[in-house]
Length: 330
Length: 240
Image 1: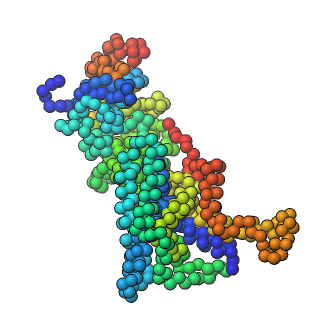
Image 2: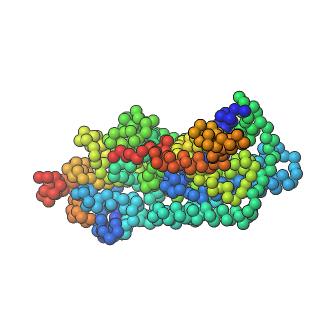
Image 3: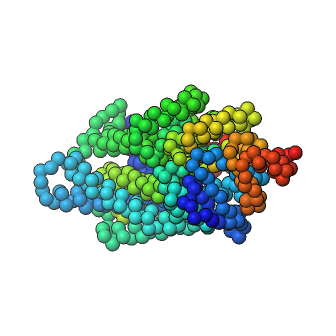
């Protein structure tokens, strides 16, 4: 098996999901400079809602095609998450619109905890196995395998990204969102109601998050009330990597982060196998003889890469890959 | 004041405070339909604050009457639908949007697509530079072009009353001349204009009537011709 190609495929899959989640962070940030830390939780609730609906439909025992059952899950998760996104903005953030920036940030963390525990109350603390109804066939390409679920996730993400780009760049309301992101007060002079635009960014981001939640659930075959936390942080790292507030940046950042994570996870074991390091290897000769390896960091270090990337970006290029350096023409 | 109906725009005892500091100290003034009125004064006299208060961008006390309605109760985004547009100080173009998108934003509140297209053609005819650069991001335009864009964008909203804040600011003399030519053209097309300007000579030569503002108060109000002849204005604002 070609590890490199396989990890690229895996990375593109998770990267697509990160990109879709990152869009939710970056849209909201672009308009009100708020990091909505509760966004990861919205994704989790999307996965949980879809899980519940899918289980219920499967329980009916109707001869429905699996793709349709998953679609029903999505159709339930999207409005639920949109409603949560709207409620978050309306109840938690709007009253703090003109408060010092720390206040909404702390509120966001609070909302994250509330949503997580709400999910704990509803769905319990045990991980829920996503029913593997999709026939997960694999196709061999160049010594690696790509599954139908991976193909579906990547295609769906491309469609969502293209759709969002079209919406934001080609529709009147999309242009109004970009105008508001640039200058709320001038946009208001054009008749743009900032509250509507801000609410819309939350709702759209949450809708995308819901779909991402279903993708993750289907991909890993599991949903859990804490899954939104790490996923949210990684997607946030992706948004920062691309340049927070920048839509194309969130997409690129998500994909790059997914690839870095997959390749890092794929190779970290080999790279930190002390038996391969001549100097150290000699000292561990006995163990290397017995086990054949002495791995310092294994693939359980998977989650490290996203945050390593976050730290490196913040140190060396805080504006991100596509973020513009702050320079304003008079 | 009078028992007559209010003028197109009338401010009564308008006051603006920033924290404890009063920027506008209870001024009253009126703009009649079809007029080109200017508000002149030194830097920090409260001119921009007055315009921002009229456009509801900042809180103010006092009354603002506009076409039989009280503006001081409305949010900023409700004004353009009532025919009031402001070209803000520093132009306020959306630097990351294209010229065409900026102009489209000017007509955001309108739904008459055919008429919008017609107005766009009219503005492109009046400001051909904008047409050449329609697909260019507005941040790459020169200062003068940005000012033209800001005015063109405001006109896309078909305003009855146009508030202009320091349109000459930061522009080369030649460009200032062009911008004022556009302003005069717009005025002849039946748009009422309230112009705030630091360049008093230019403003008074453009307007029919003027107010002089000093430390948050209106100190003089007269026809432009009389103000140009007034020794106090000549000494303080025309450098004579």
